[in-house]
Image 1 (cartoon, rainbow, N blue to C red):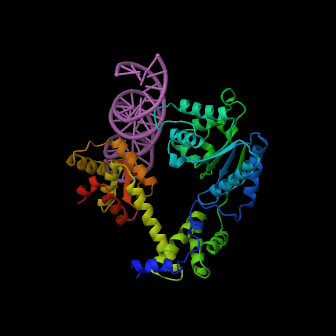
Image 2 (tube, helix red, strand yellow):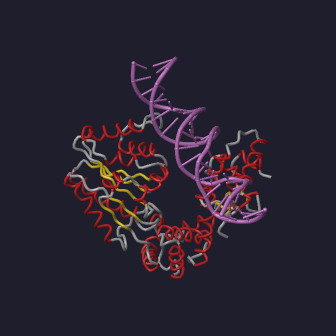
Image 3 (spheres, rainbow, N blue to C red):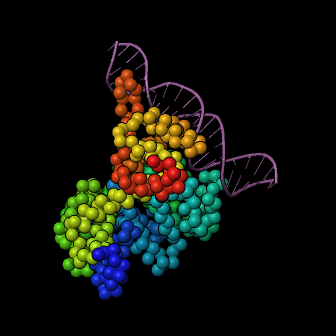
Length: 397
DNA sequence: CCTCCACTGGAAACCTAGGCTC
DNA sequence: GAGCCTAGGTTTCCAGTGGAGG
């Protein structure tokens, strides 16, 4: 039915699409009105307001789990500020980087630099060299910067807080009267424990906490989006409730809730249904999980894929030694140089963090202590992703 | 209570790619 | 263009460890 290409086009041409505006359900969407975050918005606005007077605002930390509105509040306030600064012709730039996507301290600088128009090569410069170029750039133009570092906890846990220290440290000699003001966003409430006291004192000047949304709040948020995104009476109330309660189980994650709604809507539309039902929501939940697994597996480096293939091909739990010997065997037959067991052990831990495998360390007394590794993600999705790699296709038996 | 397995995971050394300086 | 420097990934080295079996 829904697979018929003419039906798909017909639906769109005859205006039978279920959506009015799909973009409302996208992650990057910034609503005109943000529900249940009035306090955080006004506090953040107050903290950042001094930029309008050309003085340096305190650095801020936003804490809260994923999908509690940190990023959207930050972007919303920044957007409003940018509107004002444009009116008053103030020399302020707002820079937003997600440090988990940038992934290394150097890439963060690279990203920040390119947004500011400073020339930073992809590789080759020292950290301090890259930092100097950024400072010189803003010093030369007399620009003040509000820098948002999303998911800073990732950066600090995987590396250290030197970058934060360097960014918060006053560099009067280079930057003149310009300043950099930091807005750090962290998913981890205990994040502060990882910080050096010297960083904490300058960075932790102000902090805002974002509590998880309650089921009722999620429902209100979703209803709001439904009104903007879908045609009237398309989405069943029960479907909205289900999205809200599924997301509430994931510690009140609004992003998850909105994703569910979008995917459910797309599934319903593809089926040619004129209603989005709880059934579509359930299907959406499964489909999102499959996509997540597929994407995670597909983007792994070759040797991580090989390790994953070994785990996937076994029906029972394996320990690190078993995984390594099978992995080494595969490398041998395909003429690859195997990585060391130490490295493979780390790769297994990385797969665990990605939620593809479960690998707790179990002690079996006399029989040693090792990780007990088993696949937890959908086997089909993993295999599908692995088959996309040419090297793997020839190996999978 | 002690042993001893099969690792774990921290730390440092090493390697490579790529820009920098002269 | 040679030689230097750095970041990021990997290897090397190794002290440390939870608990079944003695």
